Length: 182
Image 1 (cartoon, helix red, strand yellow):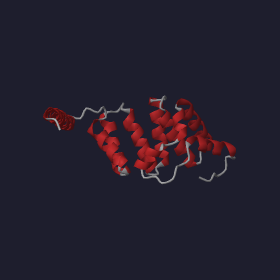
Image 2 (image 1 turned 30 degrees about the horizontal axis):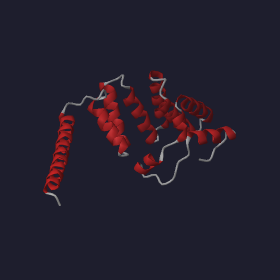
Image 3 (image 1 turned 60 degrees about the horizontal axis):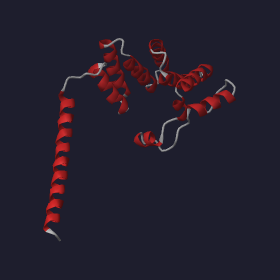
Image 4 (image 1 turned 90 degrees about the vertical axis):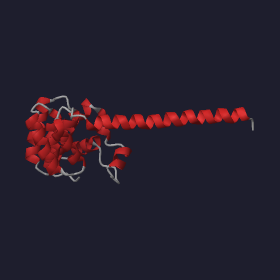
């Protein structure tokens, strides 16, 4: 093999190695910079904790942190929405319904909140209200009617594909207002 070709190949690999090491250091520096600074989230540190608790399925802890965030930032609608979802997960349906109503008074453009309130009302047997909220949510954001994608199901370790909002809406419309199998 020619000596100049070997020297050029070594130079290329050296450059690639320096770029790789540089990118590693740059990403570590960025992670350190983002990790040590003050909390800049509009809901404050309590909101960040609440999201973590909710994601981990610790709904009671999430509720407490959402409440703290709301006390500190009373107009932060995302904390109120999280509070409503935590109440719903805890089975405190009446409180959750009041919380979703408050969220929708503040943010009437939230298709996700209409969908969640519809799910809650469906669970409570308030089928006409659920139908209205499902309709509104799907008309505002048609993707909500499609359900969760395979990747989200994988991340949430869901083996079976759950019924979509569109499918549930069709089921509710086809039946009387009596008890409906889920």
